[in-house]
Amino acid sequence: MSAQRFHLAIDEAGEFLVASAARLQFGHRTAAGVDLGFLAALRARHGCLERRVSLRDGVQYWLIPDEGAPLECAGSGPCTQPRRLRHGDAFALAGRIWLRFRQLSVDCASAKLSVETSEDCEGAREILLMAPGPEGALRIGARNKHHLRVPELEHEVRLELARQQLEIHCSGGFARSALPLGATTLSVALPLEGRVWIEPRARPTGKPPFALTLMPVDSSV
Image 1: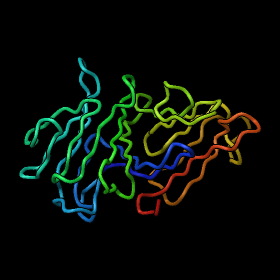
Image 2: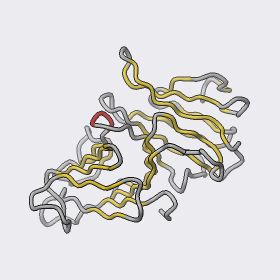
Image 3: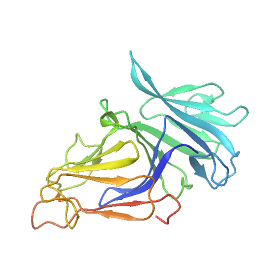
Image 4: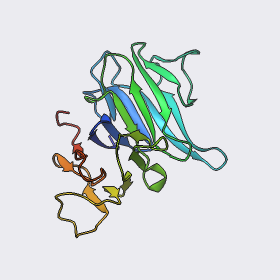
């Protein structure tokens, strides 16, 4: 297992598994080397999702089956060869776990998988495939341009993976933190050693506070 992974809970936006690596392996949750694990009748290693960068076409996500593992793409049947995923494409692992792929925006290298059947992936039904650096930053806010919508946010909250840390940016600053007065960036070391609660000052004065919670994958969501 090579991916950077953690759970992310966002007030009024939901709970997510965040996974970051150029190649993410699907499979059974108990198997070694699996990044996106399910407690279901899957092979130990079932297939992978690969992020590629093309000079002509930009960031692409490819679904790659492991040899002999049953993978199915909606509308085209069994998937036995690598297949580029487009926004809205759905695919199934072992004919039972359906996932839908979505690009967050045309200018963002990160994407999202949604589990559309009853199973979950490491305790989550929404998976953020987070690319590192500014091109993969996740934008949280109240407007249509934001990747994750939260009502009544006055200031955008931006999450960016940088080396072995997650950087949280908010122009309104942060409540109850050890940061210098006026600081607008908070860094959290990865991998997480425990639960981290963060309160960006993203809402106007007088509105309910807004918070993020980060948790290790082996924690209860």
